[in-house]
Length: 416
Ligand code: FAD
Image (cartoon, protein in one colour):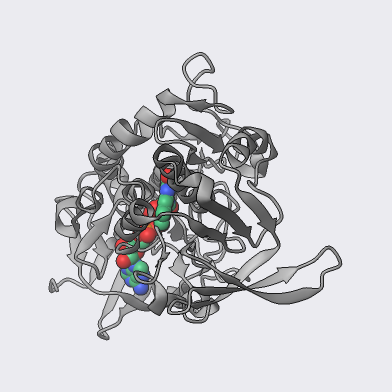
C-alpha cells in the first residue's frame, strides 16, 4: 500500500457506484486526493450477466481488470474495509491498517446471502442448478438452456431487497424464448416461484409482462420462497405461505433451477455505526448524505433507500453524491436531489425489451419520449440499447465521469 494513510476522500468499494463517484468527483475537482479501497482484481459489469445467461454476451465481455477502471489520479488500496470509526474519521482494513479521511463515500454493494438457502452455494454450477447472479453461473445458465430437452424448469425470486428487481424473470423469459425457437418449450413445465406477492413492483408493467408469461405458458406462484436445494437429487424445497399466512414446506423435483439468491446488507455495514435498522447504510433518500455523520455519503446497492438497486440507479446517484459532497466540503447547501430513479430492462424475448424506468413510489420516469420508446411496451429499440449501447456507455461514460443521461435534479435555490 502507499505510505499515505490520510486522504481528502476515501471511497469504500470499486464497483459500479464507487468508480462512477470517483470519476464524477475528479471531473469537478481534478486535484482531489482520493483513495478507493477495493479488494478484488476484477471489475464486473453485472447487468451483462443476464445476456451471458442467454448466450448474447460472452463472460469475458463483462469483466475487466480493476486496474483498468481505476481513475488515473486515485490511490487504489487493495484491501477490504473491516470496520468504521466515524467519530475519528477513519476506517480499519482487514489486514489491520487504519486509513483516515475528511469525507467518506460508502459503496460496497449488496451481499448475496447464501446462508439463507441450505445447500445453495455448493449446488450452483452443476446438476442443472444455476444463477446469473454469480460470475460462473451465467455461462452455465446458457449451457443448460442449450442442452435442455424438456422437463421441469424452475426460476426463483427471493424476498426483497435484491439487486435488479427484474433479473430473476429475465432469465426465465430468455430461456423460454430459446426453447420456443427450438421446439423444446412444448415439453417443458416452467414455474416462476416468487417469494413476493406480485410479478413486478410497479403495477403498470404487469400487463405487458403477463403477455409473455402467457405466451411461454409459465406458471406463476407467489409467496413461494426457496429455502433448500438438493442438487444431486434435483429437489428444491420451498416455504409456501397461503392466503391465511400459514406456512408449509413443499418439495419439488426439477431438471433445471435458476436461483436469484436472497440478499442483505454486507455484515461490516450492518454491524457499523452507519447502519439503518435494516442493516443498510442510513442516508437521506434525496441527498444521499448519511443521516448519522455529515461527512459520510452512500451510493449504489448499499444505501437504505427504496429505489430499484441497479447500475442505472448508481449512475444517477454518483452525480448527486459528487455534487453534494463537494457542497458539504465548501460549506454550501446540498442542492442535488436523487429522485429514486432506477431502470430494469426486462428482456422478454431475444430481440425485445420492456424498458422499465421508475423512481420513488413507483413513479414512471422514462428517459426517452414515447415516440422513440414506449416504456410500457416490448421494443426493439430497448433491445439495441441494452445489447449494443449501454455496455459502451457504462465503460466509457459512467466510469469516466461523462454523465450522459445522468444529470441531477436541483433544489430551488435558497432551499435547504
Ligand atoms: P457492485 O458493483 O457490486 O460493487 C461493490 C464493490 O464493493 C465490489 O467491487 C466489491 O468487491 C466491493 N466491496 C465489497 N465489500 C467490500 C469491503 N469490505 N471493502 C471494500 N470493498 C468492498 N443493473 C442495471 O442497471 N441494469 C440491469 O439490467 C441489471 N441487471 C443485473 C443482472 C444481474 C444478474 C445482476 C447480478 C445485477 C444486475 N444489475 C443491473 C444491478 C447492478 O449490477 C448493481 O446494481 C450495481 O453493480 C451496483 O453497484 P455497486 O457499486 O453498489 O455494487
